[in-house]
Image (cartoon, rainbow, N blue to C red; front, top):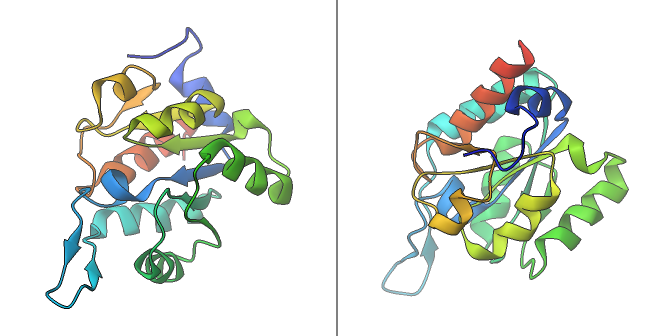
Length: 168
C-alpha cells in the first residue's frame, strides 16, 4: 500500500542509489552459528544478479545494517558495493553520511528494510520497500512490498521493479 499519492513509477525514475538492509532483506533474517561460534549468513544468488543488473543500468548500491559482521563486508566486496555502514544505530544518520559523499537528494535514494528501526529511513527516502515477511508496521510504511521474501530474492524484485518503472 503506497504511503502517498505520488506514483511508484515517478519515484522510481528519480532513484540513483539503492540502500539495502541485511538481516531479513539480503538474508532470511536467521542468525546461524557454528559450534565454535562463527556466524554464517545465507544470501540469495538472485539478489546478487539483480544488483549486477541494476549497476549496469546506472544504479549505485549501498548497505546500511544495524549489526556488524565480516560476512557483510565479504558479500559487499563480491557485489562491488563500496558504501557499507554497519553497526548503524541511526540509519538516517548513516544515509546522511553517504549522502554527503555522493551528493544525492533524499528523493534519489531508495531503501528496503524489514524491521521497526528501519521505519525512520523508509520515511526519508524517495522510494521505500519491504519484503512480505517484514513486520506489518513496516509494510504499512513503504511504497512497495516485494513478492519475494527476505533472503529469497526480495532485493532482486525491488531492483527489477525500479528498472521496469524507469523503462530500463
